[in-house]
Image (cartoon, rainbow, N blue to C red; front, side):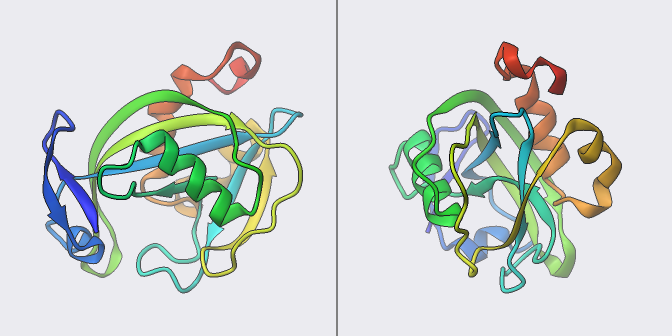
Length: 173
C-alpha cells in the first residue's frame, strides 16, 4: 500500500502500490536517496530485472515508498539498508519534488517525493530481488551516461536534490 497525498503532501487515502502506478496514476508519497562515498563519487544502482516497472535501468542509490504513516526519513534509511545491505546511513533532507512521468507499459510515476542525501561507509551487499548492480560514478561519468541510461525520474529528483548538497559536495551542484 502507498499513501495518497494532495499537491501539498497532505494524506488523502491509500492505494495498492501497483494500482497507484498504472496510468493515469495517483499522487502518492515516495522518497529518493542519493549516497556518496568518501571520494565524493555517487552511488548508482541498476534496478533488478524483476521489478514491475523500469527494470534494468540505472537510478539513484535507493527510492521507494514509506509505509502508511511512516516518517519518510525513517523509511528512506530502512529501505536503503534493506536494498543495499549497508549500515543505516545518516541522511539529510534535501527537500521535496512533485512530478508526473509516463513510463513504458502503461505505467506512471506520479509522486510527492522526499529527497535525502548521505554518505555510504563500507561495502554494499545488494538484495538481488531489488538491485542487480551498484557502481560509483564521478560527475563527468554520470554526465557521460546520458538520460537514456537512467530511470525516467532520476533527472527530476537529482535536479531537485543537488541544490541541497553539503559544501564538500559542491562540485556536484
